[in-house]
Length: 126
View 1 (spheres, rainbow, N blue to C red):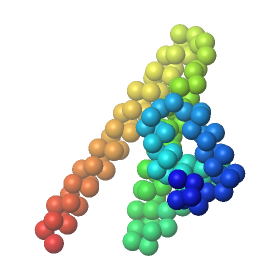
View 2 (cartoon, one colour; view 1 turned 90 degrees about the vertical axis):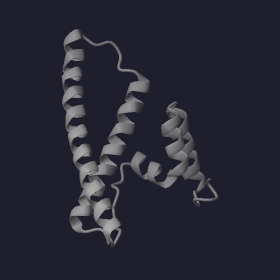
View 3 (tube, rainbow, N blue to C red; view 1 turned 120 degrees about the vertical axis):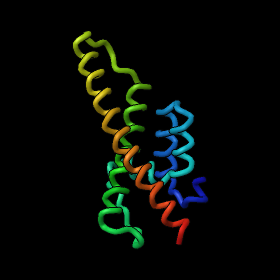
């Protein structure tokens, strides 16, 4: 993989460190499939969507989806590392935000799924 993706020894070392910090098989698979993206995100660099096929609005949508994916990976990693002792009140605050976030993400992704379905129908008729 290091050779395939042209990673330097420094990049390879950083990727190994990321691998060791996660035990989630899905996250590890993503690291292997997208090492440059993983390193860029780990270093806090923004993802730039530069595909000329995309409109400005579509680039913003893609950036939002990439941000959502990165946030979900960070959330899973944080949970794997543990949250320490918390009061029942703190746990309730987290539970309220979890429900709110789940609802908002579900609504947004459902809307995108429905929009994509309309585009597949249109594309199939052309």
